[in-house]
Structures are given as structure tokens and as C-alpha cells.
Image (cartoon, rainbow over all chains, first blue to last red; front, top):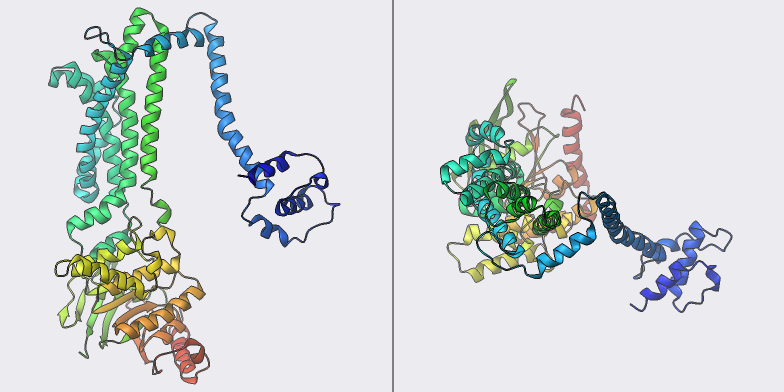
Amino acid sequence: MSAALPRNVLATDTAPPRTIVHPLPYVVKDRVVQDSVVKDSSRPQMPAALAPSSTTAAHPSPAAARRRRTELLLKILAPVLGIVAFIGLWALVAKGGSIPGPGATFDAARAVFADPFYRNGPNDQGIGWKVANSLGRVGIGFGLAALVGIPLGFMIGRFRFLAGMSEPIISLLRPVSPLAWLPIGLLVFKGAQSAAIWTIFISSIWPMIINTTVGVQRIPQDYMNVARVLNLSEWKVFTKILFPAVLPYMLTGVRLSIGVAWLVIVAAEMLTGGVGLGFWVWDEWNNLKVENILIAIAVIGVIGLALEQSLLLLAGRFDYAKDRS
Amino acid sequence: MDRHLIVEQAGITFDTKQGPFVALRDVDLTVRKGEFVTLIGHSGCGKSTLLNLVTGLLHPTAGHIFVAGREVAGPGPDRAVVFQNHSLLPWLTCFENVHLAVERVFGGVEPRVRLKARTDAALALVHLEHAAHKYPGEVSGGMKQRVGIARALAMEPKVLLMDEPFGALDALTRAHLQDELIKIVAATGSTVVMVTHDVDEAVLLSDRVVMLTNGPAATIGEILEVDLPRPRDRLALAADARYMACRSAVLAFLYQKQMKQAA
């Protein structure tokens, strides 16, 4: 910490190097090397061989600090600027009068989030319940899809005959718009709630089947040779080789599926009604409370992002790709 | 005892789109217990195929292979393999990789403590105690290959099969591992069949060098007895006349009698 501060001072200083009085000789040396390379060629030069040895010292050179600062700037400043520009644009568009501006929306949001868990009857509940209900439907629909899709993916990947059988059906059904499944759900399950869950199930199952299948099919032959040479039991093959090897692919499928499920739930709820984010959007459209629609959009976006990021984080823990050499 | 591994008139023919392809034919080879045999030949001559026949990963379409009196019907832990690309499971630590093999071979009959002791001993044999709990991705190529050797030796196989185990390593690491392998084999008395394309490696390590003719329809061309005393030291051997003679014999086979046409 004590070393970091003077290094920063040095790096930002634009005065000639020789006016800097510094107690830490290695920093001065770095600076000299730095200058002799890029800036001040008239100064007595350090032998070139010293340059690498000084940069490999325990403390990074000013150049590295500068690079890190640029990185930080890009990482924080750029997104902040983007958001500011977005809000500005929003305010500008709102001036036209058709949608509420950032200020009005923020005020409405304060009211919405002031009491997130109120309950005034079956169809008038707080934002917290709406989110919980939507997440619940996604959870059930997606959970069932995972329960069916992942084992199915393993089997399709393992048996070529099954792959041949399922390929035309998957190719045909996968591109179907999720909402096309909703009437079938209503017909078969005779309820809006279960029809919404069915729609989530059928539209989020494909990425899990496909990715798991591909994962199983792409297991390096080396790993299977190890299994054969050791003559491992089927159970050991599955737990020690098949499952860990497929896991990264599977998690990619899960991530894509959750994304699809979250996309679909809003649309499905608009049609089926009940407590949830999707119906809320539709309801507020009927009430012409556009601020609340904008709030709903923001909430949907934030939750979708959170789902995606948490799964990316999870997937990162099981990434062995770097070892496959 | 003296006919530990027997390859009897073995051959393999693959069915390809262009018709049957004879990869190996009429291979006869007997390996004594505790013997170190290398298979050498130009790339594509079928030396790895021959090794895979002994491993059981491939089945001979002609002839038979016996290990310790039993015919090879498929892969099994009595014939441990060290693969060229180490083939460690990246989600298991070095210890767990070796333990998986130990558990397979001794799991039913020995207590857990004993299995752990065996695994530790195997890692100690290749001097990797310190890296036992690292993942393969965290250790060097040479260390990975040593884990592979530890995994194979920990199974106490009847035959240790090595498929160009040091082929992917740099020259210095390779020399170092060869020296270690000499010591390990001397200490354990293992029977080894090793595929290599490195003449020095073959002569330094082997009791016999089996030279294969060029494919297709490759077979054993010559067998050279390497009559050098053990323990062998690479520095002392470098100027040894008998060593040079062996080396020249293998080179002569590879580059005069079996010169690759299209190379």
C-alpha cells in the first residue's frame, strides 16, 4: 500500500524525472528505463539488459500502472457513460410526451417498491409477489425441463440410434415460437397456471437436450480410453468421466434455457393472466400507467441479467477447457 | 515365466471405404517377465496399433495374444497404459487420478487406508508428493506424464505398456524422465513394452529393440538384443562402442532398409 501511492504520483507527474526526489530507488530506476526507451533519448541510457530485470521486480512499473488505470477507466467509466447517455436519450424522447421521463418513472418506482409485499386480493399484489410468482413458474417449468432434457441429452449422445431417431423431431420443434404451445397447454392441462408452466417447459427444454447431447458426443476419446483401459464400472465411468466432461456443455444449455424461460414467461403471463410480471405489464397498459410498464421492463431486465450472470459464474467453476491439450 | 507376453501370428485388417486395409500381419513376439522391449519404426508403420492389440483396445483379426497365460479379450487393468498425451482427467487432482486406478484394482480387497498408501507410494515413486493435490492443468507436461506413469505403476500391472510416453516433451525433460524410468523399472522389475520413434531412447532403455517394417502390412523386420549392462548411464554410454553399434544397427534398419518412399 505504501508503495502504491508514490508510484501513482510518479506516474501522473509530468515534470522532468530528475526533479523527482524519491526514496524508493527501484521506482526511479524504472522511470529511467522507461524514459530511455520511449521518451527522453538524450538522457544517459540504462543498459537494455536492465529493462526486463526491473520489470520483473516485485513492484510493477509505472507503465503497468498506467495500463491498469486505462483498463479501470474502460471498465467503469465506459458503462457509466453509456447509462448516462441512455437516460439522457430517454429524457429527450420523453419530452415528446408519449412516454414518461426518468424522473416520473423514478417517483413511480419509489411508490412501487415502498411496499413490495402487500396483498389486496388475488389480482392486486405487491411487486415482490409478482416477481416471486413469475420466478416460481419459470422455476417449475425450467426444473421439469432440466429433469427431462438433461437425461434425454445424455441418452441421445450415448446412443447413435436414438440420436438418429430424435434428430428430425428436435429440428422440427425447436424453432417453433414458444407461444404456439400455449393453446395445447390450455387444452391438455385445463388451467392457465399449468399452461404457462408447460410453455416454459417445452420452450426451454431444447437447449439443454442439444447441449448435453453435443457434450456427450464430444468427450475426447482419450478419456474414454482411460475408462476402457481401467475397465471402470458403468457407474464410475458416469461419475468420474462422463458427467464431469459433459458438465460445461450442460451448464451452457442450462444458461440458454433459463434465458429462454425468462423471455417466455412474460409473454405467457400476458396471455394467461394471474399474479406475475407479464400480466402486470398488460394490466398497467390497460390502466395506462406507462411508468409501471417501464419499471416492469427494468425489473425483468435486471432479473434476467442476474440469472444469466449467476449461471456464468457457476459455469466458470467447471471450465476445464484450458487443460485439454 | 519366460513367455510372459506372447504375440502369436497376430495381424489386423481394417475395413475402409477403399476396401480391406492390412495394417499388421504375422507378428510373432515373446516378451520375458521383467524385460523391457521397445517397438520402433517409421510413423504409420503400425507400432501403436500393435501396442493397442496388447492393450486390448483393438482386436486382432488374425492370431492370438496372451499375457501371463491368458488370452487378451479386451482392455484390463493387468495391462496398464501410459498414453502419449498423458490422458489425465482434468477435473481430478493428480492424487485422485492415480487413486481412481488404485481403487479399481485393489478397491474390493483392501481397506481405504491401504489404497491411499498405495496412491501415495506411486506418486512418491515418480517424485510428485508435492504436487499430489494439484490439478493436471496446474503442473508441467513432464509432471503430467509422471502422474500417468504413477497411475499405471500403481495398478501393479503384469505388463506396462507405453505409447510414445515422452514424445510430446522437450529433450531435456525427456532425458530426465528416461533416467527416472530406468530407475523405476529397475526397482519394480516391471515388464515394459514401449512404442517410440527415438533411436537413442530405444537403445538406452531396452533389453530388445523390435523394429517394424513400413506399412501397409507391416511386420517385425529385425529384433536387436541390446546387450549393455545395467544400470545404464547415458553419459557413460555416449562413448561406448557397443552402444554406438546398437544405435547404428537401428539407424541402418530405419534409414537404409526401410527408407520411406514418400518422405
